[in-house]
Image 1 (tube, rainbow, N blue to C red):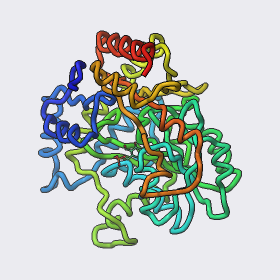
Image 2 (cartoon, rainbow, N blue to C red):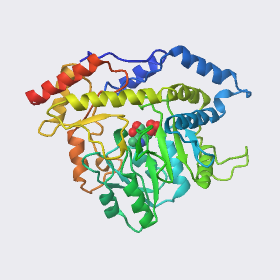
Image 3 (cartoon, helix red, strand yellow):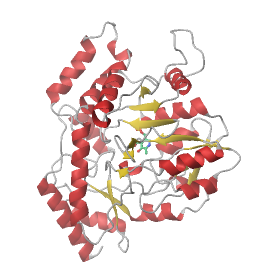
Image 4 (cartoon, rainbow, N blue to C red):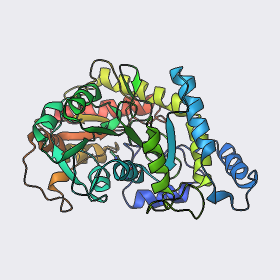
Length: 396
Ligand SMILES: Cc1ncc(COP(=O)(O)O)c(C=O)c1O
């Protein structure tokens, strides 16, 4: 049934959004990317296409997006991104993680990851030739459980990669301590967590490297895209090489690499979106506050002490209800919602592992993500609250 909530944003990207919606990639729980005002975006694209000194602007780099990111970090966090912190933009978080893992560990090494995440997490490990080992999550925040991680360490473990799921920071302080104790690398999958932080320290800066996604449904987008952040100069260089056919200087290829470059056109979209990330994050947080204080009969998302949650998703649990029926009832009444993720990664045919991860398996049966995106109006929020509370009361 067609949702009664407005489809937000999208002007010149209508076609892209429609295509994405057709494949189920977008729904109301995420909102459509807000590319408005279109003239600003067009101007940014036109700038990128015309201001370059090179003949083929889409083939050159990304320095402008890196600079813009550094400026935003300085503005919002009050700290400069120093020269030792590298920001390397790539075509997606998947490629970012792939490059960071390839640059730091080898074939056959084990990387401990959550199973309760998008398959890109395990995929980007598996595609390097390393083995993803799935560990359970904490029940409150759905991120890697440090105790489960410690129990999963074997002599072949080389890295731990938490996911800051739904925009909530994983327990990276405790995971970092475990990694230090066992001589392991910490790499952060921050695909869903732009501007999230733990104890005021931004995600993706706790470990050796972190990777963000700029996919259209994320808190900011570049159309497609991502970036790797690291303060390790050697790793940064290797990531840059892997991103660009193994070459630093043209035709002097040092290692085997791929074409994992982001185009300037995507970087221009990213720059335009980045300017609004602060405002959008605040809107997500304020929407979440309204939902927190008015929803009844469902489990609202918990926030760990010291965590700054950026609500890529606002995920409730509906224990005692049949989650899929609950979702169906919401849809009938006009509220779109999403299930992230109905099949834990260790149960996917791609990985097919035999371990039992009880917290993960329960979460995948009970979780439901409600709309929280920045374009919701007060009336939308009212409507969501009333509808969810009615369904919870009526039983589903
Ligand atoms: C947790 C997580 N990791 C990685 C990715 C991959 O990001 P991208 O689509 O930019 O490659 C996603 C994308 O949805 C994600 O949610």
